[in-house]
Image 1: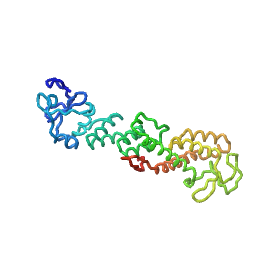
Image 2: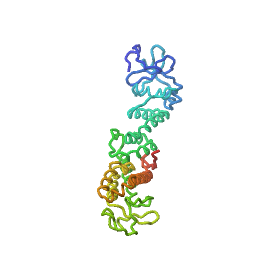
Image 3: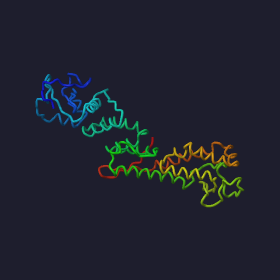
Image 4: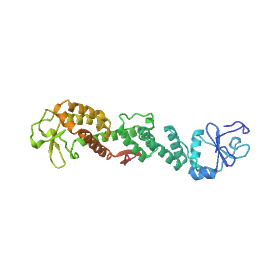
Length: 329
């Protein structure tokens, strides 16, 4: 509070330092913003109600030179600058980080300003791929379920769910994210329980079980129901040992990161190809169809992503569960 109404006031930078406004907003750090009541009233129901109520007059609630009313706000100058720029035409504020987004969403909630929520959502949507857990935390905290659901899907590209913004989540909200990831992992791994999605069976990796041909090497397992792969047409195939090891390795990786990117990871593919080429016969077959494993991995990845995208995301909204199916697009 100002102890002397005649004390020189500190004003904000342009355009909030002019003499045309009819109200002054004072920040918590004593910066004064000159604004227009009608613009604030249109943008914010809270300001509209505030300006219709009679205001008590004290020495420090009136600007000495113009006798304009000064309204004390609890926000600092940075927050008020963002809020006012959102209200004024062609003055859209620039927000660049999670702290700015949190400020904007808090302002939106307090002053009931939809334009601020739109600004925050646009910014957060843009950074979902690079910071999905933080976006999920902030969106969940402010009940933005659609945004939170989309952010949750991008956490499948991460090995860890750690974020500096996890403090915004309560235990139930964090559990729902962890549980969602677990269900995504189960959905991803389930693609290896039924092979009807495989449309081509290159001889570099597969052999029809019914043909009973002598194996050119020891890389094909003995014919058994456990190692049979049944196509959509009902044909049974055998796959090489190294192909099965690739599948088992990807299943382990999908448990930690349920994304199609995992199964097409060049590291996995190189290790599998190196193992295949350690066998002279398999090397000959793979050299004759060099893209066989890569093409299979691409189809495998697409199948994993199709399974994962069907997993619903659950939220707590006003004490009730809300279920959303999110899309990566």
